[in-house]
Image (tube, rainbow, N blue to C red; front, top):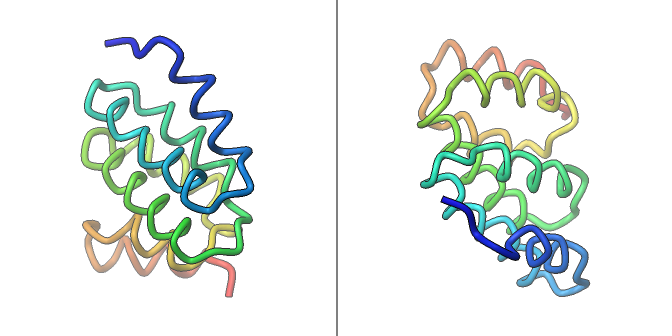
Amino acid sequence: MDYPGSSALLAKLAKSKNLWEQRASIMFTWAHIRAGQLKVSTKQVELFLDHPHDLIHKTAGWMLREVGKRDIKLLRSFLDAHAAIMPRVMLRYAIEKMTETERAKWLGKAKS
């Protein structure tokens, strides 16, 4: 399913100075995830890897976890590229449903 105009809306919200609009830009990718458009979510999360606020980290990690429920290879690929620089809370949320061994692997790559 395509969501006309969603790319422009996601970009606008992501660039906002308002924390809640930024958070909404990540949460709105949930519809894309449900429609199988998983990369929309991973691309949106990439915009917030260096964001200072914990609420953004939690929301981004949650959406990554949802991506992983549908395509674990895509989540692992994302983590390969970004685990070392991701905020720890974001990473923890993203890997929450993985095995203890795999969680330990990713946490070992995380920034401190």
